[in-house]
Amino acid sequence: MQLDIVIRETTKEDFHRVLRFIELVDGDFYPPLSKRGDGGISERVRTSLAASNANYVVAQMTETEPSDDLHGFVSMVGFTRMWQQEDDAYINFLATHPSYRKNGIAHLLYSRLEEILLEKGVNRVYLCTWSDNLEAIRFYEKLGYMAYSIVLNDRGNGINTLNYRKRLDRKFLMSAKQ
Ligand SMILES: CC(C)(COP(=O)(O)OP(=O)(O)OC[C@H]1O[C@@H](n2cnc3c(N)ncnc32)[C@H](O)[C@@H]1OP(=O)(O)O)[C@@H](O)C(=O)NCCC(=O)NCCS
Image (cartoon, rainbow, N blue to C red; front, side, top):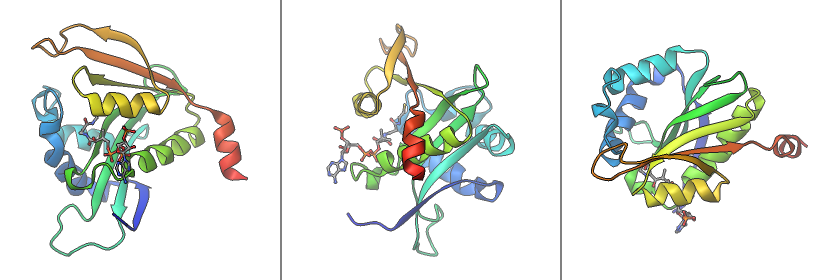
């Protein structure tokens, strides 16, 4: 699949597209993000777009149909900087539109995210997933994430939470800039 896409950080004007995109993939999360008791998806998006240390990075098609209420959003990742320390970040969301998976879009998006985080002074990134999300586990481990703790049966039904972290390589940013 050949796609013309741009990768960019979102702004407050993207609120409805970001919300719509998360609603689209909500059922792919365990438990769904809408059931997590932290104010719901809308509050989650509003908080992220308003905070100076949080945002989403989106892969968006350059040409879209006027009827497309996602405005060409095909993949999106959410992050919070200064999560536990000044120089770390937490990835709080990652998904690709179900019709565009396995095209390398999340890899492309993730590489840009690392550049953005390095430029903002981030040295370590944390995230979590759940034990039967094999696609995500493979994805993160190929990117160099290492599991540092497992919370058994954290999500019920024998599903564990896997906590991952990765140290970012500053040399990568230097070479990308040359
Ligand atoms: C995890 C997720 C974000 C990956 O998104 P994606 O855009 O499909 O990711 P990519 O295409 O970059 O890579 C996925 C796989 O497709 C493969 N792939 C990439 N281009 C490909 C192509 N042209 N043909 C076939 N396979 C391809 C990649 O090699 C990779 O396989 P691997 O993991 O065995 O290496 C996606 O599966 C998703 O949205 N899942 C639901 C939400 C979710 O679970 N999020 C994570 C929560 S912690």
